[in-house]
Length: 207
Image (tube, rainbow, N blue to C red; front, side, top):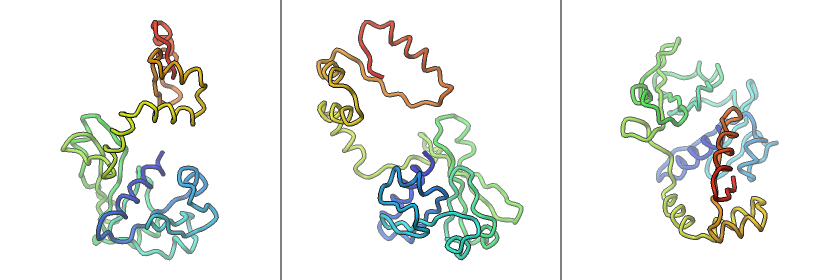
């Protein structure tokens, strides 16, 4: 999930007209390659979609030799290597990208500076859903593609078939006789309670 957010942000920044060089440090290229097959896990420095991707291993030359960028974004409180921070100065804008949240308290924390032991300031960026938060990453055509997908019942069935859903369930969904529920949750979520509640309904449900 974390690399997915970082990759999406890096691509959006690189796609902006007049964008400066975008560099993304990643410590697990094998996991990265699972969501971006064009990534080569055995290559320390590579460029994909106008983003320079550097394998993050402390002490390796490709990382150790890099001078700090004008804007440094650390994702989810994963601080840059110590030697990188030592080379930073007040000239750099240092941002800590936090997780997306709809909780009220993030409005009072978004944009706040955090004074570091070396005198630098790191600013909190909280993505959210209100004008007082940092907003969301969104591709220019995202809503158009979403609306087209939602307006095409066959597109949903095609996706489900690709995910391995059995033909009998596809037929039930196509006929409108079954509900479709997408669930994304942590292991400790009360999923059994949801399944029990669905089981008490008169309508079949595919989860």
